[in-house]
Length: 299
Image (cartoon, rainbow, N blue to C red; front, side, top):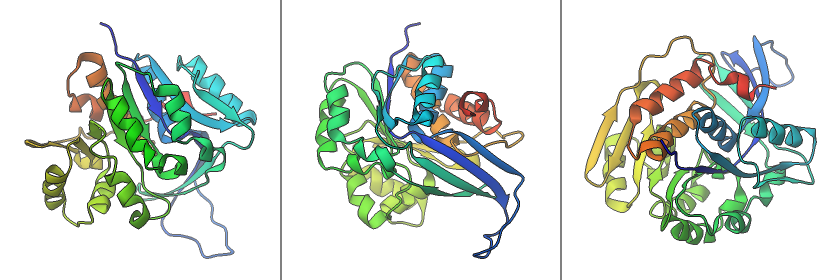
């Protein structure tokens, strides 16, 4: 079976993951944790790695620093069969993201942009403007200020004519008041919007999912698949709204990046056989949570 190529546009960074803790320590104090892990991270990196392991021809459009970390990322992606032709190493440092996990399995993040500020609309357009017949995932634009430019919509409109476009924005580091109009401006220029539930409700400025879904369906043309953690997901379009249960997860090894794995699993259905396959999306996310992809991203 011929698999459509997938292009992932977005952020890569070093992930430092520590935890778990029950509460934040007081300033000036120190606490011990059971685990501190350093690995390849970023929404684009996670999704590209999973897609490559699922057997898809995948390309990544991103930047990193020209330090030993960025060079190591590029080498690892090449080993995994990811096309790094449009992965640029720029003078400067590769970004970091620090995640502190809570005993409830929730987490908080601290991140910096560094050379990622150079990943702007012109950078992406120069590499993708002539692309046809691909599935293109834009992700992590919450930390990519260069992709907050209004002309991103114009680029997406052009790409959408001959490709299938997906968008997962991530949670904005500078608040929804600034980020909401940026995202809203893009939602009719993509085929699929892939937020989690908290992001979706914050975008719609509503407390209850049912009401937010109805307003979204009336205001935007893109279909959406809302990730709802262990509860499952909600698929919606103009004339449909379906809830899909997730299979119960076994040992929880890693929840950070599970949403990116879910996106990859979902895209694999459409890129592989042209079908919406929510079960595969949940299965891939479950595999990620149970640690089956860790060997590919751990230093």
